[in-house]
Length: 194
Image (cartoon, rainbow, N blue to C red):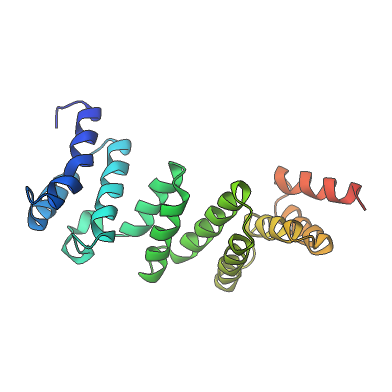
């Protein structure tokens, strides 16, 4: 493991091509993934999760064949690395797999909702808001409302033109966390338009 991180990352990135071309067999990937359990570099670990996710998503490797060190909360961790690298569409897919596998379900639902909202901001499709709201409603069933959930609900209501509901949700966010600057600013902005 004395190679430079860039070289180790490149080696991981070619694994899917090597498997597809028949140079590596899926069992070889399992053994290679075992070595990843010793990796300490956070960026390389992110690359590993993205590569292994791609192999699982394309049916080359089965989640159950992975070593325990990487299998635990795999989809949630992979989605988080994708989210952190602004790959929201793939993060949504991986968060969906995390939810289906009960891996950190509440956080996966919240982060998937946030991913939909981020996508909505660059491509204002109403279904993104619908999907985000459904996820946030599920989060609310699991725990009492938190300020970040209330803020996102306020954003959704505001985008739909339901300003009274938006004000209500932003007010809840501020009440729950008086330091929530985004909610305060949104609340002040909406109250000025009334």
